[in-house]
Image 1 (cartoon, rainbow, N blue to C red):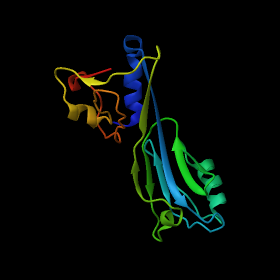
Image 2 (image 1 turned 90 degrees about the vertical axis):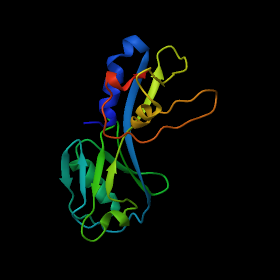
Image 3 (image 1 turned 30 degrees about the vertical axis):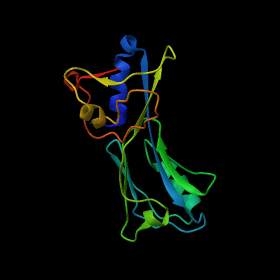
Length: 173
């Protein structure tokens, strides 16, 4: 289990030593949709190993209500631009499975597994430095969605893959 929530838990286990706290979440943003269109049955949503297959809905708004009533571990909403957002505040992976008629595409979404992200904060308000220890490498950092940089330039990490952080990885906070 290498999801963002697991990595956040591991970082938070040593908050007393590092002063760094991690928060995991996941956000999938769909395209703009016609809120009055019907949604066909058979779209599957899996969060943390729990799969739910949704029935048909008379409109996208009804689909959102059905989603929020039946899918454990994630919520759906329509943003101000009329696009669907599926999210959780745990960082668990969200997997969307399509039905036989391409219902996800009509919702501006696509099938696949969407990994969560990590946000780090410092209790002292100081900058957080992430680097590889003597036994680690830049590739070890990248495997967890982190990057190492020097200087003041801005840098954004990548998606978290299915690896667990261990002492052998040589990642220091």
